[in-house]
Structure formats: structure tokens, C-alpha cells
Length: 96
Image 1 (tube, one colour):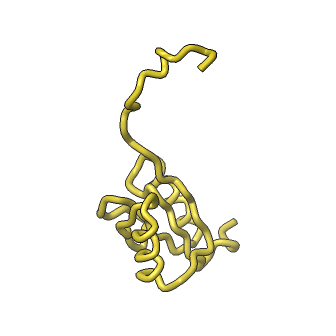
Image 2 (image 1 turned 90 degrees about the vertical axis):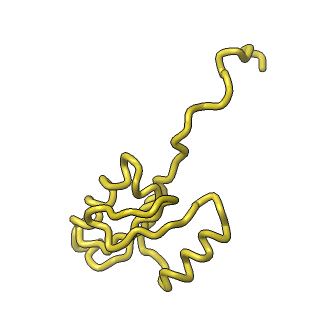
Image 3 (image 1 turned 60 degrees about the horizontal axis):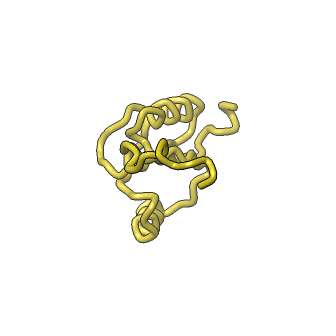
């Protein structure tokens, strides 16, 4: 897999989450150029850079595309919601 990824551009969304750094490390270790994408700025080992963007916001993604100036070869869509549930699923009847 290393030869297949050498020099390729990879984006990892949810870069600062629990799995983001794992994906970044694996891709960078395989020779890819890795850019992390997250709603929070910061540095992540192995990432060429970390770009701030919200994957739920179209304008944010369009701005990211302009900043990158390239189409990624690999996309790891790792973004998720890190909030507790807002409802009580236990109160629903099975028929609902």
C-alpha cells in the first residue's frame, strides 16, 4: 500500500477527534501528503497542515477547496458529532 499512496494527497475530516490522528499517522506512514480537516485549529503529528472547515457547511467546504487548490486522491470522512444525545430514545414505544 505504501507505493500506492506515496505522494498522494489525503484529507482526513474530524482530524482532532479520537480516530483522526490514527488515520493521519497511517496515511503519512504510507507516504501520503495528509491534510487534516476539523472545526478546530491545531497541530496533529503527521499532518502537513490542519485546515479549519465544517463538513456540514457547504460554504465552508467550498472555501476549503479554494484554499487547497487541488482535488484529494483520498478522503477519510471521519467527522462526527461529539455531543450527548438530546432526546430520550427509551421513552419511545416500539410501534413508534
